[in-house]
Image (cartoon, rainbow, N blue to C red; front, side, top):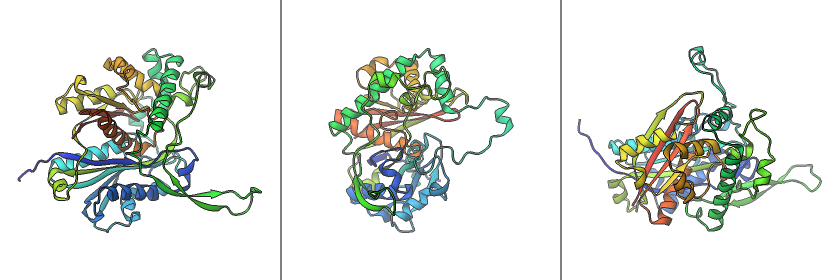
Length: 397
């Protein structure tokens, strides 16, 4: 069988603004939000939806509005031809980084030429864990399975991370995200969306009227202080160090990446912004769970033939502050963080972590930051529930 090989180029990478819990985006379904994002992505690149062969969509809580293969339903909701296929991927927090991996691999192998990768999570409307199931005793006999917050506490204990260190990191995340927002760094990656927001009657009763609202700016970034953060109570254990303030925020959002073969991009007259050049996945202890980012990055860098010295921008999902500080300790990249090369524009703590969308959101932010710096290589990594991690290396074109 003949084998074709092609670069997997990133034509564009975008996202919705991120809505805080029960905020603006809580008034729109995830498939309808995603439809606006993917239609905006294609419109600004003048791509006919009929050209898309597959839509790979990440989503973690696949129940209710996010059930029934939301990937296929996004394409249908967007009004695209029925010929456009769609599937839904769940690698927990790494779901839409996995869809990047799937799409790139399909292009590299010559099986597909034009794919949209991305994801959605409407955590206000479809609560995290509402699709909870059971686990086999063959698993629970081997491992003590706990919620991720407990694992974040275990990491803080194992790596000797203090409450003050976690809060200081989190405060800096908000400061970096606010600066990025104010300087317009997110504008290229954000697709403004229209949402019908209910107006409560003056007396608080009756049927609310709806106002069509243009939503274009992230709303989860907080103006906070170290003193406010220090006043928060531990979220998971009474004497713990993990709080709501040094954990990722529950939010709503969607993101999408347009991935093409070189031939298809040239045929359609598209100008790619970047390319994927390597991915890495790692499995780790399901109890500690969240400490696999260094290993996933090592594998992705090895596939790309690069080292940390080659990487200009490093995105590490801020699932918890302890996860990022553990990553910095194990990789020896603390100085790079201080220099602003690691999470330069904030992350899950400040922007929020819409589970199934975060991998694609990080990709959009990474590509934009590489362009802003006129830099060549970047990497994005994410820890994953039940003991995994995933990383992808991007080269700016």
